Image (tube, rainbow, N blue to C red; front, side, top):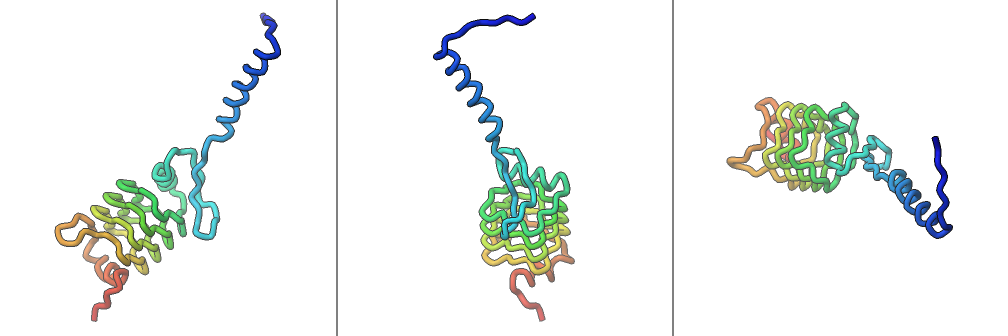
Length: 160
């Protein structure tokens, strides 16, 4: 059974505007894009924050090789086993993040905050740790003994 009602032109315009605005909101739902420095799209998400989008991508085994995450707040993010080879992570807050087993080969971590970050079994060859905050003596950043040579090289230390 259907019913018809009559409304004035003025009322119809108001109803139409409300319905149209609601439709526009759905269409405009923001998407977060994770791109490379060159602008190639690596991942697209409807999550509300970049941190959530990155976690989603990693949880779905997305390849974030070369991702441009400069300045992102990824504090406490689980990036275990992520492929971040050659990623730009400069000025990123990774404090307390899990990077265990992550591929950070050639990644730019200049000025990143790695305090309390778990780097165990992370692949660090060629990573750039210039001005990276590690919190030195008594810190909680973790690496394994076998990672020490790659870590020292990444810090620019030559062991003879």
